[in-house]
Amino acid sequence: MKDLNELLENNRAWAEDIKTHNPQFFQTLSKEQSPKYLWIGCSDSRAPATQLVGLRAGELFVHRNVANVVVHTDFNCLSVMQYAVEVLKVEHIIVCGHDGCGGVLAAMQNLRLGLIDNWLRHVQDVMQKHDATLSRIADETLRLNKLCELNVVEQVLSAGRTTIVQSAWERGQELAVHGWIYGLHDGLLRDLKMCITNPEELAAAEHATARASA
Ligand code: CO
Image (cartoon, rainbow, N blue to C red; front, side, top):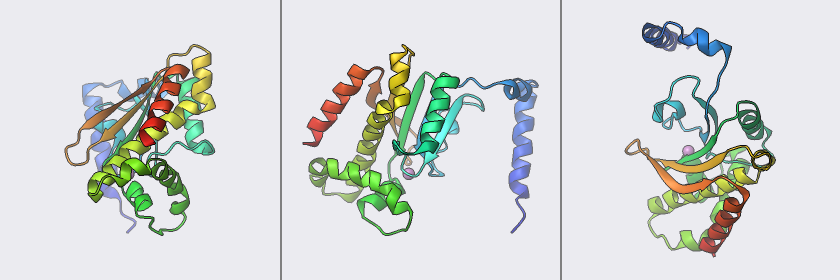
């Protein structure tokens, strides 16, 4: 039970492999990080952020929670965003959901799992807002995947409304918020064509989303 040697051995092999190709890699990286991207994704073990976009250590700043939710009172997510935007000066925030998300499914089925129900309440808000769209989809898997997409769209809008993103835009800092979905079945990312780079685009996306949900 206490033996995690396999993981520690994996780690040694990983570090050795990197040092073989680039002997200074860790020394250089230990001095500073300058990632261009902040990833806000689901905690799901099947959606490993850095690996699935082919980046190396130091290239992707990451925040993950169940169902990739951006909540305005979540100081964990907001602190990550603030540090990423104001200190690291990332240029892109990528909100990435995935199809077949267990958190989104639990929200959709109104399951009683405990504390997490309160967290998933945010996804249920998305579900209620888009009830007209979702109720037209009879197949449960398709409906789930649509809700996964709509959740990303709403979380992109939510990220855009934070004081962090708003202030960055006011300062003239270049910052784009994107919405993506990761396919567990094929390992591929899909761009939801949701990219917001200023308050006008945010307002337009909010109107479009509200119209689509009516
Ligand atoms: Co998930």
